[in-house]
Amino acid sequence: MQKIFGGKSTTAKKALLLGAGFVVKPTLTLLSEKGVEITVACRTLESAQKLCKDVKGAKAISLDVEDAEALDTEVGKVDVAISLIPYTFHPLVIKSAIRKKVNVVTTSYTSPAMLELEKDIQEAGITVMNEIGLDPGIDHLYAIKTIDEVHKEGGKIKSFLSYCGGLPSPEASTNPLGYKFSWSARGMLLALGNTARFYEDGKTKEVSGPELMSVSKPYTTGYTGFAFVAYPNRDSTPFREKYQIPEASTIIRGTLRYAGFPELIHCIVDMGFLSQDSHDFLKTSSNPLSWKEATAKILGATSSSEQDIVWAISSKHTFANTDEKNRILAGLRWIGLFSSDPITPRSTPLDTLCATLEEKMGYGEGERDLVFLQHKFEIEHKDGKHETRTSTLCEYGDPKGYSAMARLVGVSCGCAVLGALEGKLGKGLIAPYTPEICDPLREELKEKYGISMVEQTVV
Image (cartoon, rainbow, N blue to C red):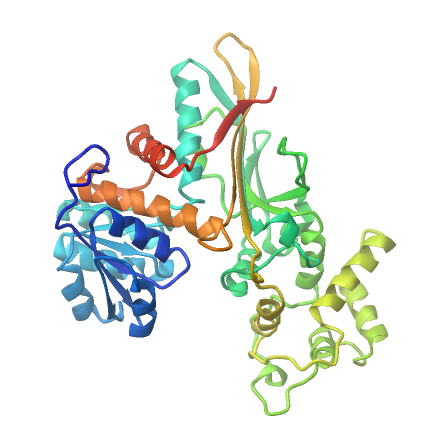
């Protein structure tokens, strides 16, 4: 009889796991090892069967979550539904769970569409737990820990910085962007178009997506072997309330990349390659254009010669200096944008570029990824003394097992599912923003799975 969170056995507990992404397998395996019976549901039966192979207590089904009747049938058979599908579909799963009075766990941010269901969730008496992966997820667990400790001692959080990067390990960062794709290139590039909002020195600041790379700057982590740059990510301002730090004059949550990434991406943005506008010359054809021809058309260059393409780029993008210009042009040349190679036409500049990036920038055999997450707190103690404290997670993937990203997201999600099965998380629409929710999850991850952030005072 296995126990979780020191509670009752999970014998006979059942879960519906929706999704086929890279984080599904770690979640599935963890739950199987705890004796949970899991139904894995994907649009295609083959995808679900592949995930279930050699996993005890797992069965595969084909399911379309947009078919409300079929979804209700499957949700009604289980104790918890785990939604690891794109976040836009979570409300469909939650509505079904409300009807069937079944708990839900997701790794996604709580969205406005979910908030609209909050009253119904409460009336159904169920738990809908969001934001429990890596970022969001583990980041919350350790932010709340330090903030709670400081407040209990009468101190104040004057500044809070939190940066996370999912990257190739240094020895695998073998391209001009220092980045590789284990998931959709489109998702990563689209995220670069999001406006960032944050607090800095008591002022609310906003940076539009096209200018995001221009505000990136070197970021010192205390781990001198890494040359990171950081830039803000989406809207950090709600975290003043969510983390209950009204005293903080600076709150920035953002992304880490290796040095060189922002300048090259900024140029690609200025060239128009993040456009989602459809063009006839980028549509599927038996005789697709070469990359240099497509690049010339996207830029409006006078010809497809490299000289004319470079002139067109220079009219749209300002290079800091000649060395940077040469480095960026070398990066564009490596991607193939000046070459005679045929494009893989996908209608839009964004999707056509993504097809090539995914082909050239995937992980090779034996390569591993790196996750680096760090909080940096500027603390003013009750006696007036100041302290800079960091919480850091540095984890490498296993080329023969899970990637670091998959393990950290999937195991965190699995622990939350176990908590939901035990009734340990509370009811309603929740996320890990309180010690009552965070403490047991953080301890479970550390003690049973070796997942933790290293906390230290640096000043």
